[in-house]
Structure formats: structure tokens, C-alpha cells
Length: 284
Length: 231
Image (cartoon, rainbow over all chains, first blue to last red; front, side, top):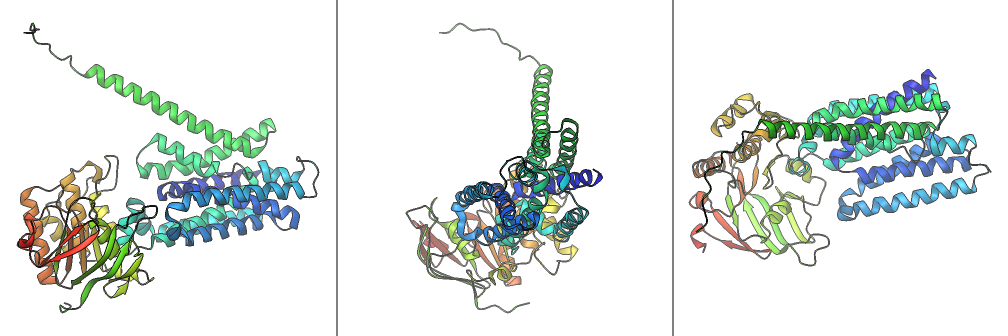
């Protein structure tokens, strides 16, 4: 249980931080297809009998690498290519599940691929997750100035000689690895919720990027942990519980923001002095 | 200091087209900008001026023809190295009010790709000349359009580029600053051997300072010798 708790917190921090970069770099749909490549890899592992995380990682990292390389030539086609990959990998995943030897959908291996499981965290996988998080933090610290310059203005950074494509490729590779690692915790169909929902909630809370960068991993880890607890208490699938938690956080953030905006607008209106009306003149 | 001579930018028979557009944005363009030359590119809206600058920088790739920046083919991987020796002031520089980066950070981002950082005095001198030295700690989004534009100009000048590309750099500046910055650019060309490629609708501040004017119309480049040739 402790392993699962630690893994869920780390997954939330990793995906929450990556989500910040994914959104700011404008590669949301690209990462969506990378997530589904991991799902296809995990489903294929059931047939091949290979390690699920490793096979998922090889699929997601390979796709991330290919998409990163093709970034420049795809240009306007990028979003459509991402969706084509998404549907293709979804189809592969469903076919693999269909032709796998398991007969019931609720069997342990399939259920862990589809909706996640708290029982899958091993010390080795936790160590790998810590390593990926450490590598990612090292990367963002080492290239802090360049990454900030890209996030500030991608085109200007490119014009000044920063290799924007290489940095996007690096982020995509980290996304590929993070998704493969969290896939068995949240399940293949919901893995991207940990990537996007915390960032979406932080964007609702604040427009300032520096606050979003801090909030996104905090929301990610707290959603992940609360989802895990919910799953433990209610005996529900962990992936769905984590997703529901993150959606609740997003909804609460949106409602709070709306309420705060309305309150501020009302207060501003009440503080405004009444305009003095001059004497009415009869029209000529 | 590097001696003058050689080409900073060279376009030969360049065609550029945006994907999905039936009409090419640049048609059979020939352009040569020498080092230590101040070139003004002007023309009506939609003539392809910004596209031309982005092609020179290698942000846009030619469909046909060849573009060289400091002797490097813009399609080759080495263009990254050439770009490190260039600066660019984009046309769409305005930041939203919630942009929290300070003016100083924005200037520092411009130095992120450089191996050798310019001395502190250079930053102080340029920011003082552009009268933004007291604004450095303020978030960029809270500055006026003119102040933001001067921050981007400072970022470009502090890099001490060999080629400086400016896209409508006077759009938010008043008459006094336009003239003062035009003179700063002229002295960059004369003293630092920088090649300046400036896109501007407003030719008046640089009328007597530019070496050559390039007139663009419908994606075609028409070179004039002097500014007097205009209109």
C-alpha cells in the first residue's frame, strides 16, 4: 500500500509538471496519441507475454520520437496525424484485448490495462519512476533559460538559435516514459487525465504561468492520492477514481473562479459612483 | 572587430508558399545583403515582407531556390549556429497583461542561446539608451506598447548580432524614439559592422540612414538604390 501511495504521488507530480510543458508548448493532441500508443503496447504485451510497462514504454517513446522528428514537416497536418495515430493505436489495443487468451474482461491483466490497479507497483517500478522524475527535473534545471525562452516565445527563441524542435522532442520522450509508467496505475484509457486535468485546473485558478507551474503538480499529486484513497475505500477501479478526483478538482476550481469573478464584478460595480444626470432637455 | 565585406543574407530564385495556400507568398526572390549594410524593406500589406524576413532566418523554408544566412544554407542543420549570430524583433511582440516575466527576464531569454554572455555594462548601456533601465523589474505585460517594443529592441541589440532583422520596429514608438533608434541602428552598422534588415511601412525615420531600399509587391522583390526612389 505504501508503494502505491508513493507511486501515485510521484505519478501526479511527474504528469502534472509535464502537463504544464505540454500545454505551454502546444503539443496536447500529440501527447494524446502518445498515451494511446502506450495502451496499444500494453495490450500487445498481454499477447506476447512481455513486460507490460516496458512494451508500453517502447511504443509510446518510439511514437514520441517519430512525432518529434516529423514536427517540422507535419506543420498543419500535425493535429490530424496525431488523431490518426490515436485511432490506430486504439484499434490495435482493442484487437489485442480481443484476441488475447483471457476470456473474461475482469481478469487481472486486462483490468490493470484498462482501468488500472493499486497492486501493480513494485519497488523496481517505483525506482524507475523516481529516476525518470529526477532526470526530468535535471533536464528542466539544466536548460531552464532555454526552456523559459521557448515558453515565452517559440518563434523568437527559434530565430535566436535555440533548437525548439529538440526541446519539444525531449518533452515528448519524457511524456512517453511517464505515461508508460503510470499506465498500470490509472489504466490505459484514463492515463492522459493525469497529464491534462491538473494543468487545466491550474489554468482556471491562475492566468500566471509561474503559478500554473507550481499548482499543476500539486493538483496532480493530490488528485492521484485522493483517487487512490477513494478506490481503496469503495473498492472501485483506481484509474477511474483518480480521474474522477481530478475532474472534481477541475470543476471546483472552475466554479470557484466563476464565483470569485462574479463577486469582484459586483463589488466593483457597487463601489462605482452613480453618474450624475444633467437636466433633461426636450428634443427640438 | 570583424572587417566589412561578404554576404550576410543571400536569396537566389526563392519561392515560398504556406501549406494550404494556393498562391506563393514569395515569388522568385533575389536579394543580397552585405555585411555592414542597412537595408529597408517596404511595401503594402500582404506584400510578403515578414515572410521574406522569416525566410532569411530559415524559419520558413524555400519551396524552390536557395537561401543563405551568413553563408549557411537555411535548410541545413548548421542554421542554428548562424542564427545565434542574429537577432530578430518580431512584429507581433505585444504581451498580455498577465504575462509575469519581468523586462529583465525577457532580455535575458535573448541570451539563452549564446555561449558568451555580454558584459553587464552592455546591458546597462543599451537599456539606458532606450530608456527602459527603470522598467527592468516590472512585468512585461504591465508595460505600454512602446515600452514593450523597446524591451524587445534592447534584447536584440544586447546580443551584439552580426545580422539584425527588425519587423516593423517603430509601430508603437513616438516620433522622437523612431529617429533615435534609427540613428542607433545606423551606428551599429558603421561601428559594429552589423547588417540590418528592417521591414517598415514608415520609411521617414530611416529615409536618409538606410543604404538601400527593397520594395515588395505581391511577393515580388524590387530593389531600389536609394530611398528617394520611393513613390
